[in-house]
Length: 537
Image 1 (tube, rainbow, N blue to C red):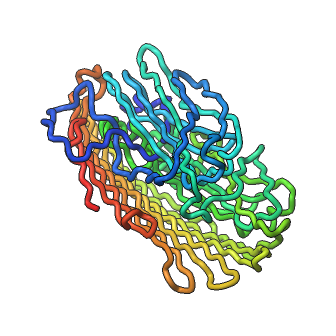
Image 2: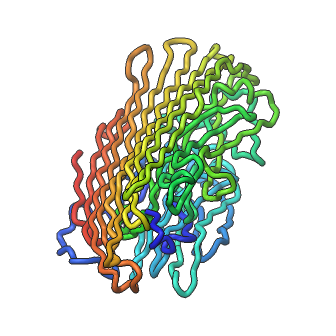
Image 3: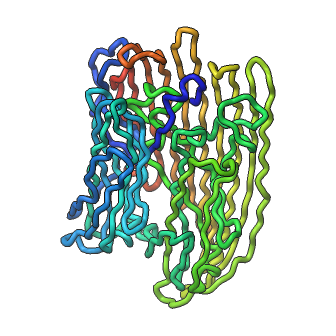
């Protein structure tokens, strides 16, 4: 939480994030819980499921190995494995990291052949040191990984007399031989933007853009959801208030809208003691926003370069803090040299956004925003004409309250992002409905005794259903909920903070593609000790 008194604690932090493994004991620890945080604590761990591995031949390649002390990127080369063929049932990226001393959370990314395949953030270390591991399924990048390419990785860091933590990481890829279980989900080509333009293959029949959008950097855009109109007396202001929307355009025409995920990094809300063991949802798994651009395929398939631009609506002009690299995923019609088509519908309801400031002993900003976009287009393929219609609607509501001096600072916010994609060609139409809901409800209070307390609940929820001819063919339901309550003494040396804190996470995933149909795991901590690790499925 941005607070005027403790803002210096967060200044200059650059941040990072995939599915964290860490130390995952089979059952809850039985060790006595300390009365307050000491100089060491449990290694970071999340309740998110690990990547499942096939029981086929596996080959491993080291992609990067580096120690990050500054903003110098690691550069190397990648060569595909020679003994697992060029078709893989799954490819798993794994990062193993360690750091000790004192350090901020840091943002990191990794690219191969110019394609970003991984974005992550780091945990904050104990004086005695921590280790953590992250896994990510990168099978969708098979096209990139079939060819040798340059590797670039950066976790921007600062090491000096105060901030001593050197971030030591090793990244590997494990290839499992065979065909993917869901081969249709793996694109034929992955194209990075070149100077903001893209030239798609002329036989592209499906096109999806993925955008790794993060607000970070230690300034106000790290806490974009807390910004207020310029009329309100608060340390972070924005003319349009806290609403942010990530938009993508094709040749200047709005092609997709999305709600950004409200990431909270491991120093977030002025209280690192909330996150030392359990990070917030997606803090170590920065997932890309996806936009189905198939309605524009008829325009993009003309063999010429086209502009693809990503912008963040609501971002004050000239303010830094957002990163939004783009990959374009392409599925090709192998039986056609040229796929033609046209954009047939484009209906933009426009962004409706309002932030109202009400002064008082507790200042208050009420925000509500909404936006709807529908695009449709067809492509003429070797298997007939296919019309794709994409409908997406966004809604954001929040109530932000604070006192003079920001010694009490509270936010209750909800973001909804609802999307339907219908592909109608030969045979029954197929429609995928996805509804995403992100929630944040928290309060930070700084008492006269310099005791800072943060109570916070974060939610990452999503439901998805695919139907064909009115029958459900696939479905999933996700509920990832974090709760934390931590207190520490600010403006004193580290050994005098006398910090206490509890945190919990419950990650529930059900669906047709989930092994056994169900995954349900709960974690709990107290003063840096893991007190519960429970599986219900």
